[in-house]
Image (cartoon, rainbow, N blue to C red; front, top):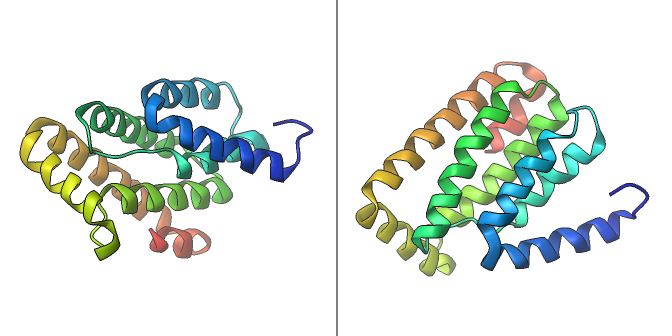
Length: 157
């Protein structure tokens, strides 16, 4: 963080992304704990938000699905309070990457596509929670997009 180079921060984010494949629950909890302790105006808040893009969120296992749903619910609470445009842009970028990975429909993402189909058929309650949190996130993004300077980053999501 403080005093480290951008390259070192990127390397740390990549390592966290790899670790999150096995320790997603722990790292997601740590993320919220650390981010809550940082004022929104500090640059580190932005770094934490950017690192989320590399977390291994998904629905391939029940544990990962539960963490992903809880994370999304927590993000919507943070999003409701986010005022700064740069943070909104980073949040939209992170969510776009997370949603793309979780709900992949691309041919190259057949595994993710199958995971998504299994998730929606096997875990009805979790799928409903995910859908509600997803809808909530998009309603916040829609509100953000009403401001001209935030419209483009929001519409990319």
